[in-house]
Length: 105
Length: 409
Image 1 (cartoon, rainbow over the protein chains, first blue to last red):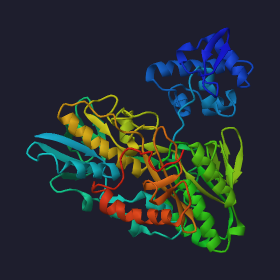
Image 2 (tube, each protein chain N blue to C red):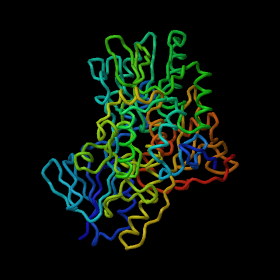
Image 3 (cartoon, chains in turn green, yellow):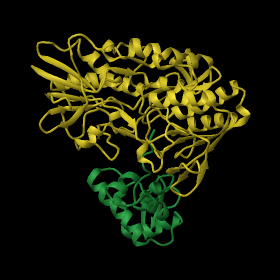
Image 4 (spheres, rainbow over the protein chains, first blue to last red):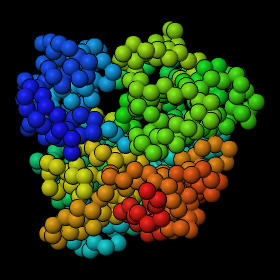
């Protein structure tokens, strides 16, 4: 398994750079993962999404879908696309320290 | 008298009734099945209706023709499920109690989930083919269409039968060729997925098919709204695809009663153990088919494989044994590719579709991940198999769990 260092902490990642263990994640790592995804500055809007993903995972054991972020997290879908352009579900999950969202078959 | 209550008499509910009725002692167990109406639809047949291959009578039969003797049948919509009280309320006023509940309420399309989809153009130049009404409307529309821009679109995943829109595209290419107007039709295949399909090897092969058939793939396109004044679909990241005819697969959701009963996720699918098919919340509730939230395909073949495992687990549950964690996400789909040919794919949660022979390793007669005439005939014969064997819970010569024999890595 490859590993990477974010904010001075070396963690296991998969082939696409997603954290293998979401417990390895710390808030300090998020801005550095975000940079790799082409997001240079994490705004309050970004953090709102990241915190919701972390919190919702605690509750449900699953990464929230875009629909759930809208329904349960109050995050409008168009805003999500503006914050995390090109694949908001994937990008936000990655920055929040989770694996790639399970694609539907 | 103990009670097994089955909600939904579609593929999953009907198979379960047929499997359980002959083996449970009628002095001990009463089986009841509930559905909202009298007619069973062969949903895979909808695909062929727009192209005049099937008509209404090919895809509908009375549900009662497929029930085993000795069970109670109630035709009524369901008002609410009360899992804490082990009760189900029907809209006809009846209240049913149960010891074991099997939920097989399926999934449906929800065009109202997309802004603009129902703005007056629905079933005028925007059609679905996941309902009988949509498929018949499209049949009539295509009969008189002289060509233009056809956009085939999946609004969001998951959907019932993820290969169906691809098959629709292949059949459309064939149909317009037959009608002599293929040169007047531009076909765009617009999908939220990164490619033609979810699994890499099949996606590559099916992507090549789109190329060969001159169908333009527009990927990673998630529809935000439909603009019916300018006939275009607009994605969340503001890309646009225009159309003269839009064939859409709208958002698929589980039954409303699941949401109203507080038992579903955001799409009204029921959180279900992936390998045992038991509800994650209630030990005496089991879920089969499209109603589950399993990361498997929503398809009749998956339901059929699930039924084999669920049948065993219901019996084990009755006998107080631990459940078998045997369901592996097995799916098996014929893919109609047009011009009298077809493909076949066979896969599960972990193993993507691979080439080979099926069901007999090395022999076939069907070829996996390859376009053959035999696969097309398999698909056409399947309607007979569905009505005469599958719904009745008969043994088919295929294993419930996926097998690697006959497959090439």
